[in-house]
Image 1 (cartoon, one colour):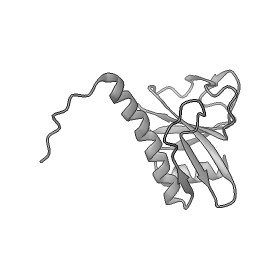
Image 2: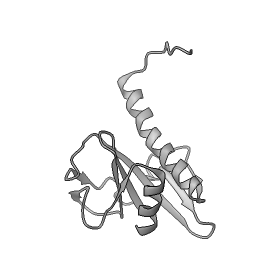
Image 3: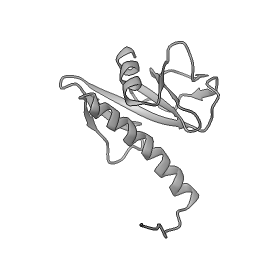
Length: 130
């Protein structure tokens, strides 16, 4: 069996974890027949994943939360940049939320956010409702 011998810094591990949620989202969207694009560099434009139905494009920001509490307060992190959705993943529980861009702060389980169980079929249904 392979043995990992490389020691990874805490900051690098954090980055890898964030990328893993972006990749998971891309996989689920591909399974649902979306065209999926991932920018080589995300800084400034706040687009982690770009999806298209062949006609229209949607810009998505992906965030992971280190919590189990669905009342956790989340903040706008995309000032002056137009995005279409923010998708939150809990790192500690099996839920997530699809949110429209918003101003200020609000609970992740806000009434305008669509909850999903972290499974591709459940996510697909939620994304189609968002």
